Length: 447
Image (cartoon, rainbow, N blue to C red):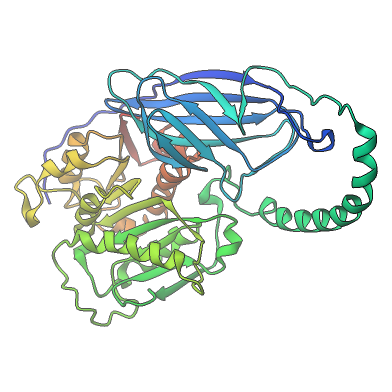
């Protein structure tokens, strides 16, 4: 691989923040079930580029404890959410609704939760207002419920039937299910790189085109896992032995990794040597089916809103093309890049079709892909990182002594872009993170 070289170092962070406080009362049929309500919402534009932006939203509960939340607002200038983590969202026109996921539905009094998203804008990107939490408009105070005007009649009939049955079922089930998630070893704020789960490597269910690397006990992760679909060097679609150590490292951090080779190197009907990006997108479809298959160890354990493609060398070309799929939220290219002459049938014009953040890694001047990687980074229009390790060469990140360094960078980038982890973001983009670890050199743009 070859490319012209250019070097500059830039760290950009465009941020705008607004803090909105809120509180209002809600009407309830019985005073016993009414709750004080109030909230505080922090909306921060963490990065912005032409046509796109990233944002972080914090929600603080000022009222009584909440078990299950829904935050709504309206974008003032037609902005659209394209990717969201730590929540699920729907959008109809300018109206947005974000609801909790399994691990962050409970917010105690004074407690908070956070989610992040990437979005698109056209013309302007003003900060929204008018947030509402569970239907309560955010206006700045806490409203307590008014006492019931008829406490006597409701107390007597409901005391006997409701006190006894409700005390037993609600105390026991609620204590048990909530204890498990809250004791999870991987809360959203914990950097993924700190995890080290035992890993199972196995053939993909129903096909020998893929090898799956996953935490052996998915429940131990404590929340649905992101998916990484990986393309091998030399576009090896049968024998993936070269990447076993590297992909085990990634899976141990709480990811489901789907590699494009059979688990035992046996023939699977797929030719090696040329990029087949559809293998990666089909790998995403396999993960969708497996997440829905009753009896699968990954049944409802995969978060399909957090999907990435990655690949090494020829497999990096596959990842860059497959990354155009709208299900993909992040892309990593290791020692790779599209050729200036359109070799393998894909020109560098394909880079303009990327819609997610992308990370390029190269192994320095001795890496055959060194110039090509740099040229691809320079041409990329989405948020991008170029991380270079001059001692890694072409295969050091996969099989060499730089494997741990390289896969750490990959995990941190995925943790930033898929999980919205602030510590991982500081590691990738901050001056005291990867850039401060000799002999790495890091550039970034559009964040």
